[in-house]
Length: 204
Image (cartoon, rainbow, N blue to C red; front, side):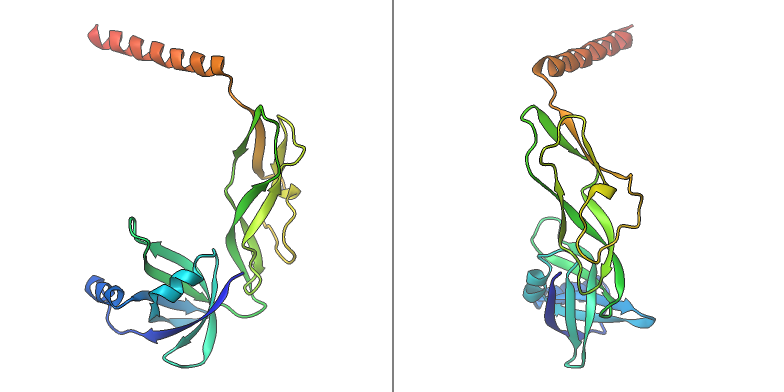
């Protein structure tokens, strides 16, 4: 869980032109909502925000125009398609002790047989956790697994306080045999044969 103090300023200008001016000033346009409150449009310092959002599901302690600070979860981050810049941010107000559902990255640890490969069915898992104790990742230990083995959601060791609300049988990953060179050649030849047949059909 990442929690950072950031001073924000309220903004009253909207639209693409206003957003561009905000970003040129070294700020990121954002909107804060939740808990039955009206949405509040903000500008956040770009550099401080970028540092805070290096960790997924960051919880920010935000003070608006020098007022009382409140906790907010970074819910949706819009990034520039090319430049390392944040273009817009959606923030959801959270309270200490409150449960939130977030997507947490799955990280494979351990080793597998040299003639095998790990096939991930899911890259993240949706967990319910306390807003101020959101795990940054969940380890998936493949130590000792042989070809044909699988890991399901029920096999995962979740961080304290985190709950998975899906099915325990949901597939996370499987250990599969690495394709042999002859199989790869066979697949390539089959593809070439299908292409030749299609070409002959077109000529006919």
